[in-house]
Length: 358
Ligand SMILES: NC(=O)c1ccc[n+]([C@@H]2O[C@H](COP(=O)([O-])OP(=O)(O)OC[C@H]3O[C@@H](n4cnc5c(N)ncnc54)[C@H](OP(=O)(O)O)[C@@H]3O)[C@@H](O)[C@H]2O)c1
Image (cartoon, rainbow, N blue to C red):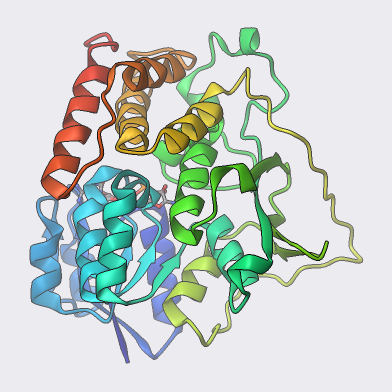
């Protein structure tokens, strides 16, 4: 029996994770967390004793003593739980990419000390993990992350000036929470994923490419030094990477339809438009600059997306706020969580000064 602490239980990933747990008799929920949603009903349905809303999630984890932490919280709020699991060598199924992006080196050092498993739940990284498993690092030439391109693929910058929140939330291939859906529309999500891939797989930024692939059937590709490339394919459904991480290394059955090749598949690829979607290039620059620049990118993006969703910032303003915060932040490395939290707060302050209040 594997006991799972599900953080972000009421969200898009959280709800799909509950379905995976309900389907697998060897999985059981032992802790549930959300931001402000009431968890009483969910907890009694699943007989879960350890429940928490907001606050320091490590207290919940200390009490629940899970075998696996599924971190599906949105944003920097997930950082404490990520470090908690990595430090203790407790298997971390990670959907909360923001925590790995922001904590970067600190998370890697905690993983080194803890010696546990870090299983990505992000579909592209789950795909990369599977293509890379058992391969010698020196045999790998480069990684390719695919991006659907979001609802505004093919538009020019001038055509994005007046886009509404509703339009940004209409993702063509994935159904997800509001923050990641806006991130997909700006390509900040692919920027976060580029940073995430660097930290997860230890691959330098020049060797990680992003390509636009509108149908999201190919999740990622690994190119090897002998000229071969391995790709991971499947219909876009988060059940697969969630189930993979929770049942690893068994790969349990799911009810996701199997790939129908003869029925026709469109596998088109093209380069992303970095001028229209500057957040992808900004993320790459933040990663290459190192230190706390990835944390600044993440924090400023969180502030800007919240302001866009609130109607206080136009769509194109998101990238402007992030660019300005990166320009003004000092980016000095964080030696511990306290310094990281300071860098995050400072970046939020810088970003907030560029956003109109209400
Ligand atoms: N959705 C996807 O398909 C997908 C795919 C790949 C990666 N991810 C990543 O997975 C994470 C979750 O995404 P999502 O789409 O599931 O988001 P979501 O639907 O917005 O759900 C977010 C969850 O986090 C909880 N939460 C927010 N602040 C919290 C806090 N301070 N403490 C504890 N819980 C908190 C929310 O609780 P409340 O209900 O109380 O607000 C909710 O349960 C994100 O990092 C995202 O980038 C998502």
